[in-house]
Length: 392
Image (cartoon, rainbow, N blue to C red):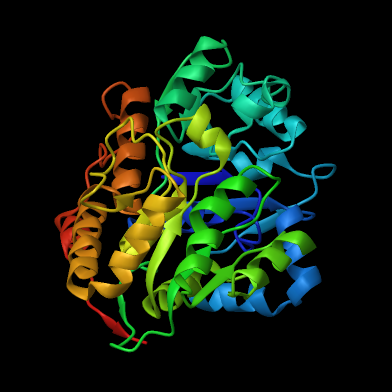
């Protein structure tokens, strides 16, 4: 199939977590022989910030890490929709797109019904900024891919779309895999995440900073948009702050620490239950022991307590961290269980299977899609086979 994608950025993951999943999905589609074209705005906010802070080096490193992935930039004022969408079989438009872009692609689809058109939502704005999301004109879209059941149901309840499917994020196991960092670790706890817009400030103090300080653990944090008061709090807790980390470097960082923590933003805890975001998928794929602050796995994606530990408050996460740091075998078993679960159903290969099934449904039994959502035996075997350890 010819697949055309419109996303905020492929080349930059600076405060842009969707790039992680996008890269994995695009890689899987190309591996399966699809012709994939991706367009990102020339003035994408993420890429602008990445270049402003780090120059062109990270963009060059992205192309080295993902040699098969390419994108084309566009200016909405001059963009040739007819050329970009010619002979397309499937078009995906991400929710962090300009309202006019979404409308114009929909209008094109109204005139040219030869392809399937889906809107892809991987954010909490449907809850936190419904006035923004309600302005998207999805009248001529075939449906919505929502990265959680509660979000899927919200689209239909509000009448924003006629059809919607749950399409969770997942780990790109070509990149996110266990790496043998050796017996001697660089530190105890590592956290990769952005400070954000005060959506989890209290939670980060309770579930990350204060336990690390109390236990006097050696810890490091990577991420962006940390205000001065946040950096001061990290310093007070004895935590090293290392700034932005290229997402494809995270596996090697994980390999040098004994544990990591997932602290979801408040909208996912309070209103969008069942959506873990991509961080837990990637941590489990790397085989690092994981502790989560409370979130409701209402869709049964994992087995809490077996794939990862859950802490209901600061005292409990302090106890969990103490145990993981001191019980090497227990930590290994926890990480191994989570890794097996991840490989069994939460890879980008699984998500492409799901996407193909959705396209088959739209195509009345899969007549437009020769694979009908099924991978070749070679691809199935590759996805099921636990990846070997790499040397750090």
